[in-house]
Structure formats: structure tokens, C-alpha cells
Image (tube, rainbow, N blue to C red; front, side):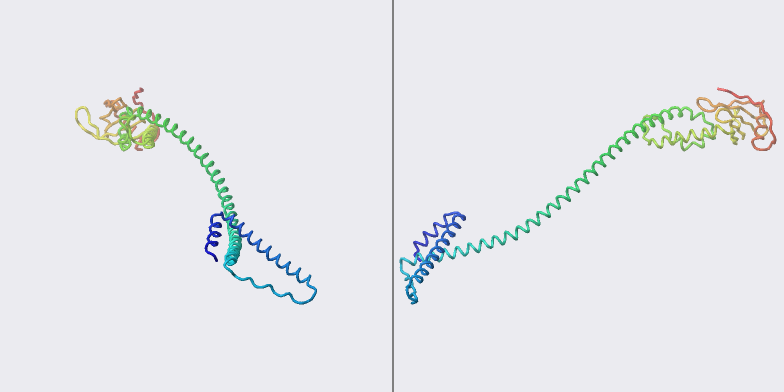
Length: 300
């Protein structure tokens, strides 16, 4: 092939776009097909018009000269390019068909995943709404509990302030029994760091024990110091929280007591010693039956 013609033909095709090059190749193919068809028709016409059955001699072979060689080479190269282009188009169609199936599968998979995600999002939205509803309910309950706790705290503080001055007025046996609770009782209710539950338990414990003591008649043995400095064992009878009597075994040392602001106040009353001793005997079961004992009582 003439180098000059090949270069010109190749450079012209290279400068065109792929679509233009494809069109050029298709046009070349159509031209060659037209030339081939025209040659076939010419030969048939010659055979038909011949008066004899003498076979038509074959046309002389085209001689390859310096003028026809470039054209033949360009035609061969064009046909080669056309075949390659057809193969490339077929390959692209096959790959596109295969790729299309893959893409369609991926699209269907993506659509299914999208539907699943949407369902999950709906479920999550419902769950979030339910959680928010419960959260609002819990927040309302928390606010209500806080308000109740503030009221309870105010009630406990008020109860502590009322009970604190009354603690010294409790009978000694009851104070001894309440000693652990009294030790935890705050000196300043406003500055106490104890929990509200513990403080409420202390208040209720004192009130419960005081109420129980106030509903009974208690008899206890005590060592008492008298004004002259002597000490003797006496039996003290507490009538609840407001009145008490004491006497020794003989009924010669006796007295009457009642609660005061700073504790119990005891006043000797030997004249009623025998009556108090009789009351002690009835409490201890040493005397049987029922009788009326006249004893002084101080009403506050």
C-alpha cells in the first residue's frame, strides 16, 4: 500500500469522531456491496444475451500496478476495520445484554431493600412515638413524684421541729428504748443531709413507740437519787406519757412525777407512799381483785 495514501486515509479517519468513523465504514461496506452486485448483474446479462452456449471467458485478472495497489490495500484495510467494528458491536451488544440483566437484578434487589428499609423506618417511627409517649408519661410521673416529695419533705421538717422539744419530756424508759433513733435525729432540720426516707422513718418510729407507751401502764425498777443525796431502788409506775409515781419496797419513800420542758419533774410525796405501793402490788400481781386507789394527778 502506498504510504502516502495510507497515511491520508488513516489520518482522516482518526480525526473523526467514533460515530463518524462508524458511518464511514458502513458507507464503504455499502459501496463495495453495490459494486459487487453490479458486477454480478453485468455478468448475468452478458450470459443471457450470448447466442450460443459457449462459456463466457473469465475476465482477465486485475493487474496490481502502482496505481491500483493503494486502492486495493485501502479497501482490504477498510473491510478489516469493518469486520472488527462488527465484532466490537456484537461484543458490546452481548456485554450490554449481560450487564443489563445484572443491572436489572441489582435494581430489583435495591427496590426490595428499599421497601424493607421503609418498613423498618415505619416500625422505628411507631416505636419512637411509643417511646416518646412513655417518656412524657414518665416525665409527668416524675414531676408529680417531685411535687409529692417536696410536700413530704416539708411535712417531715415540720414534724421534726415539733418533736425535737418534746424528746426531753419522754419518760426515761422510753428515751432509753428510742436512744438509737434519737441519736440520728437532726439538730437542724433545714440543713440535714440525711435522706428523706431515713428522716421519715425516725419520725414515725418515735411516734409509734410513744403512742404504744402512752396506751399502757408501765412498771420499771430504777435507782433514784433523793434530795438528801441518798440513793435507793424504787419502782416507778408510768401512766402513759403524762403521769408517774414511784415508791420503795416499804412505801416510805415515794413521789409523783410529770413531764417538764427540760425533762421529768419529780416531787417527793411520802404521804401517798402506801397507796402507790398498793398500786405497784396490783400491777405485779401480788394483790388480787379490783379496787379504787386515790392518787393525785396533775393535769396540764
